[in-house]
Length: 198
Image 1 (cartoon, helix red, strand yellow):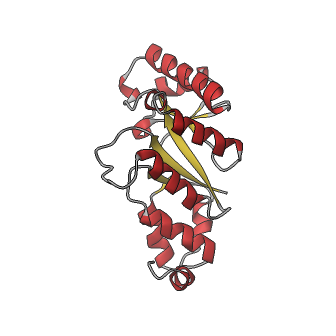
Image 2 (spheres, rainbow, N blue to C red):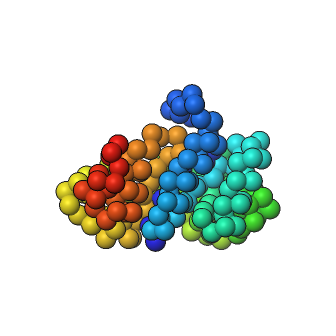
Image 3 (cartoon, rainbow, N blue to C red):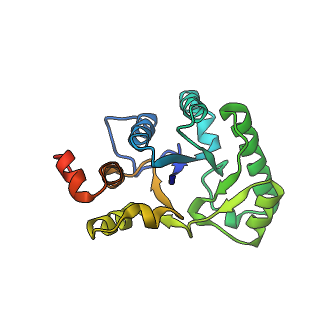
């Protein structure tokens, strides 16, 4: 199983310029794409404060998690650089996040995917105290690199096994869509034959 780490769910972003879809509709679109192959699992990293005012997004995440099609984890209470905050604030925010995921999503959070891949001794200590594994950005695959290697003829499943594909919900997603089609069809050439838009 290859994880698609989808950061910043659902922080408002000026980078999201799609006038046709709401942020939730965009999240659903990406999720449908990911669910199109059993080789991928969607891992949205949740920013809790914005989700608290979007019950329809929480409901969607809970339903997809219960169905086994999604594995959400913590990104933060707010989208801030936790490497620049004090220990008490980090622990308080992680505690709120864990409680929210338990109550609203129905899961026990296991990982903390830090914003901007923050990682230091204090954050690792806070993570352990809260029963979470800290995940930074040291083990990611960017979609551009995945597609570069796929276009070079590599079996992209092999080098992605130990890493996650890293996206943000607000980014344009055609590279991810192409990766999904390559995984479904077995090669870039087969994906092109199956999709005239590829």
